[in-house]
Amino acid sequence: MIHRPALGPDADQNHRVLQEVLDTVPAGKLELPPGTHTLADGLRVPAGWTIRGSEVAGANGGPPGTWLVSAGTTGHPVLHIVGSDVAVSDLGLRPPPADPGEHGGDRGTAITVGDYLYASAPDWITNVDLRRVHVARIGLDRHANCIALMGAVSDVTLHDITVRGGYTGVAVHWGAVGADVASIAGPTYHPHRLTVTDLRVNDAIEGFYLSSVHDVRVEGACLRDVEMGFRLLPGDNTDRFVSSGAVGSTITIADICVTWNGPRYAVRAAGWGRSEIDGEVSVLHYRDTVIRDCTLRGAGTGDSWSPVLMERADGVELSNVVTVTGGSVACCSRAA
Image (cartoon, rainbow, N blue to C red; front, side):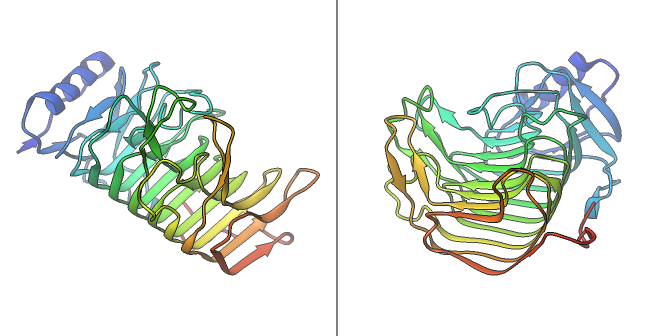
């Protein structure tokens, strides 16, 4: 069933109408009208929904014809995907200013799939497709992430994504059952079977990061005017609380162009993590993991910097990673 709700100038009414459709009718297609529509707060998206903007699609970095702007102060994502078999396309999203703190990576975003911390063992969210999505954070709003894939999520595809502003463009992070990061007892949940292609991030702190994941491919990205291009991380508990031995395996990061201007590095790959539970340091051993065909343009601003920082990242292969610290700065072909 296709739903085409009317939206107007009242942010409360817009939010109420859309959330009511998502909550009370059988899952189907939610087609949003062209224009810019303000919501009083973010929307929770249950399983089975397809959400699409107008037919004026934002393909190849072009602007979409439909924008959702959240005016909420709760920290809720503009779209919080909490169920499987969800697709979002041809849509622009503007989250409100947010400063969720060090452990609030799933808060204040444009889109979050899953959660960081769970009250009890979650069901896995699978088969989520995000494409031709734009995220815009205005001005100095650079404290919150833009798109977050967190915890018990798998089989997720991101394609033709454009991000301007914010902290991290696409943040991929493990999750766990626990009230806070110091009380996790396990198990932990690690995103996997993820594909990110044709990503553009501009004027953010960081392009993307992958924390304690496996079976992930990020291929084809232009990360411009960022302080950091991307990070490959083990998570602070690495794989201590998960029974699967797959964490840290089968990861490909390829065909990435970075123009960076931060203090320390353009790329960081780390294998060690210090747990916030007990301070224990553990090391994740990567397997079948490669960073290849990347161009890193720029130089650090701090006293000690390096285009590539490797920290106990055994098992991570570097292939054809080119650094350019002088000369003119050129944009790659997929730049927005």
